[in-house]
Image (cartoon, rainbow, N blue to C red):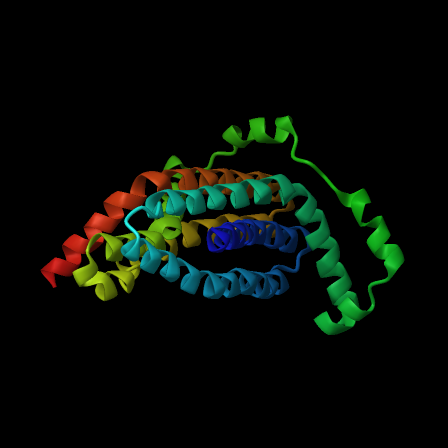
Length: 263
């Protein structure tokens, strides 16, 4: 089960990092350095992509083990990985207020230093010692105020569905390869059948709306606090999406098999 433990940790990291990318984007709006924040978001997300590369062969090995040993709890293992996605998202939610502050300072220091390498080498021990002073836990008042920020319910629902699809896509494809060994290779390569739908929803329906709200916050400073609440609300719906992924895991695997048999 050492492989499962490693995948669990990697999944926590992946979803925590992807969730915390919201804080970097919001910090870019607050500081007026949104273009720089977007470029740094790409660097941050590189961490999650690298973790995915490490994770994939371990997941494949788990499927191979389950095919050889009928007693291997593959489905339970996959569900624990989905639970790790929820844990990582919760970590990102709890750290969101703190990371907004850190990211705002990071962007300011980056502008002063002129490059990422110069900024990193200029950090002193004294500055690191002061870091805990910027910790900000989420407050109940902040969570309670999320419901009044006028985000369309359709957008929130789409974020839940998209997150659920992305979270379960690879696992469902691998589980489909386990359910039908004769279609194993085709099934294991078919996560795009699920993730493609999420990509379309994200690109066509979610990102443009978030872009308009971000532009409004950049143009009108009074909208910036509201945008922070919206980002936090998107993280909450992202968490709900990781929970919903548990329900999609098996049906999505059977749907993949159905499509493969039609081809």
